[in-house]
Image 1 (tube, helix red, strand yellow):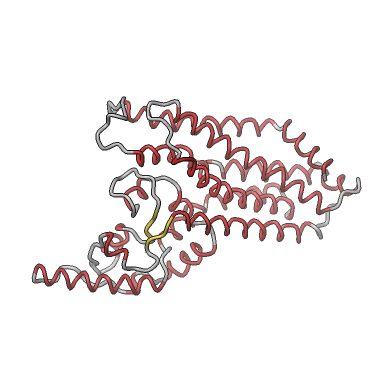
Image 2 (tube, rainbow, N blue to C red):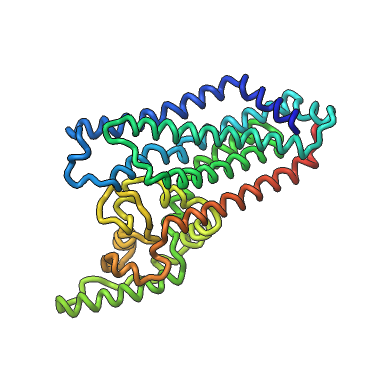
Length: 354
């Protein structure tokens, strides 16, 4: 195994495309950090400490905004590099030669996994460090929430490592560099759709029943206060439908919802539960935000009442701590990493290398 690892890392150091990816990994967060500060410069904001209403939560949001997007920026690089780099092994006969030299298939498979995962980890670390330094040197400054932000970044990195293991397993198990590359790229392109489905249907069936009960109580309050009924009680079928039967399992079983719940975005800053300000660094998230009522009103015949935070607290499971999400996403990443690695090896160990 040490000899194989030494050989693989030597190949990596002589791989020119890797240096292009490393450069892009540094340039993207650098440009993002500069862009954020240029935006505020255009608005005429030079002194953030004296800016009325600008809080530490805002500082944390923009710091996290710059560094967290490695989770969406890096997958396409990882998919292309892993599939193309390892695809050469079979084309050039490297794997067959390793077996002939007396190396076990397990050690060959493990060395490929270790090196590819280390590349992904290095890319993530470089992205986060460059983004952090860029913000620290800017007029806004970097607010890492006492280092807690690095924990969130680590959880995002675990998700990318699971993807890397999948791409590596495919590369080692399947014949055809082009086929593996296409599958990997399609997987990355489908992440956005999967994330939207998972986050839209992140609520459970029981939560919808409680949501309907809360809406009924809210309508009664409006009727008592204003003497007429303007809103209507939403139907269960508006939420538990064909989309839910796809999106909910995606949310429960995979990391498809990680982007919407952990990464910084304008949508999440508005729907964040524990802060009244936009551009805030959330400590809690709501399973079904204010946007869900709007979606229901547009695409169905119902007109559900708007819920405030007091109402949402009445629904069990509606409000979730970020810390709980970090644990859940970490566990799912580890589980899927093991599944992908074991499945790929089960095929590779019996694969015809001739």
